[in-house]
Image: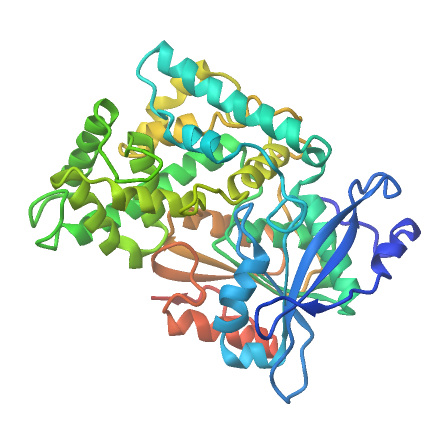
Length: 482
């Protein structure tokens, strides 16, 4: 990735010179504003995109350190929600005292001109579709749903779909940095937010301030490699869950002392039963627990070991009591579906960004079928589902503009890359790879479970990151925490 020129092009000056009008957000302590950015950076005069920005001013009397931009990942996660519901109130008091805590919903996400695709009932049908087709009819149904999804996005968000890449959003972040008056960008990004941050560093290395990339992605991988390695990551997390489950008397997937392989077999058997006979959930919209919804529910619980107890309860009621409500609730949380049957735009933005950033992992069902053994080897439990899920960009109405690339960010200040050894969604090898690519990276390792590490219970991780954010001292090379 080549850095952009150090001087801001005159054609972009009106964007960097804009003044934000801050107003009350309706959330105590927070202010909100709307920022303009060019829809198309190649043609800045061809229209704007309006981006939602929020902040919470520094609370302390000590010398302020400027703004700290946060992003929770996705792609498609609302950074404004993350700021108001967690970072702005849950980050360490010392950090919030010294920084204005700031977030911008990336273009196409939540409050920033969201990508729109399917309505609630259409999304219900999409999420219930069999993701492990057993015959040509089921394969055709799945392909039909992917085509319907893609065509709906193309119909409802035609103009925006070409301009929601990670490069576009990284350039938007630099406009925000300039508008806020910060000479450098201080940033904490989680999950996909690490790819956004690393992309920023590649484009504007000399403008990198204190940057934390937690739960790192590897920009050098193709979509197929990313999906295959993530499949292995979910298997690693499930093995960890299985070992924990086998120690308990209430494990619904096997008697105490069962092996992870036995627990995996029992879960696969349960999924096969659901494939033939979905179970009731008591859902007011009449939804039953299908194999695909149950698989999503289990995957959702892999992100955080705090949800393992909920997962055991949900599996027990589904398997023993024929009540799928618990697993359906986990699946709904993953898709951000509310009790009224409305979905956030998380999954629409997720597809729009991913399908623009990289060429599709697969372009036909035949390619998926050929790859199934490799995905099943990576995860006997989740492999088939995640292989077919990798077909989602095949029918996208807009061609990808990005491709796999290494990011060096030569000349950037020290960047802290954080990896968790049993992270399901951003496997630890990705953090190691990104740390090797970035010229100024320091790798900080958390030996443990769950997705990302900062603020998740490790005093060692939190103190290392807080020290870096507050005085600029990165952790020692090779530092490991547990």
